[in-house]
Length: 269
Ligand SMILES: O=P([O-])([O-])O[C@@H]1[C@@H](O)[C@H](O)[C@@H](O)[C@H](O)[C@@H]1O
Ligand SMILES: [Mg+2]
Ligand SMILES: [Mg+2]
Image (cartoon, rainbow, N blue to C red; front, side):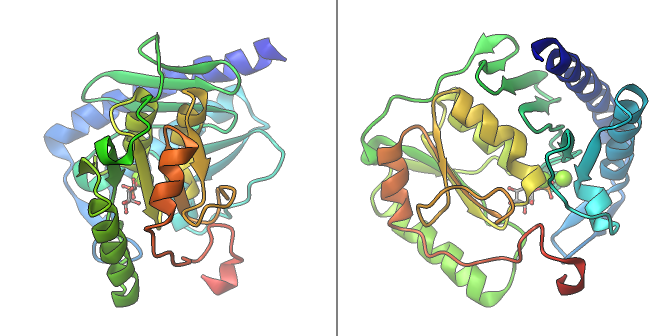
């Protein structure tokens, strides 16, 4: 069992490195940007190229594996998470900022290619950055805590109101500071690394958070829904924190809303 998944993890790391090289090269040339669900939901040719590169490479080595990929779902592929070994791929997370990475299910790989930081987590075996084990912050005081969040790509008036109102309440707890790396995956890695105490966002997708979420729990942190229940990976809502006490205080400030689920039937999309 262990050896079987080690093959997969080794492949994930190798293909993430290959993808990182493509992204770094594209930074010099490819800035052709198209839009998806809205004028601020961006995709570049590099997002699509990197997703295809990862899928092709995995198919050659693990032909039975399945995929949920951001750009494939945008092109009409289903977003079905079954018990089959499934790769959940966000070829570039934070396209606006041109950040990089790749994902998997019972293990997570987030490659920040500009910094050459390879984050790797494996269920029950810890989370690591370039081989160094990660541990969440031991801060217990919300007033001394730094919280990461993002505005996301939803510009619906009601949703924007709730996002601002939640942020205002979090700031006025008060917390020590608020940050946003422009990438859900990197924000989750910041929680796992102890650089921020918490991260929350409504509107993310399963491919934004699958790998980073495992990074947080393997570094000793907690995950929950923004209203305090169990995290539902397909719900497009996430709260990650260094401990339950910090998480629950943030839950109390969030004005939640319910985006369309990632696994909603296609006719509703
Ligand atoms: O689209 P993408 O760059 O892969 O992923 C991005 C997420 O990482 C970010 O947290 C969110 O605020 C953006 O709206 C977008 O979803
Ligand atoms: Mg993303
Ligand atoms: Mg992306």
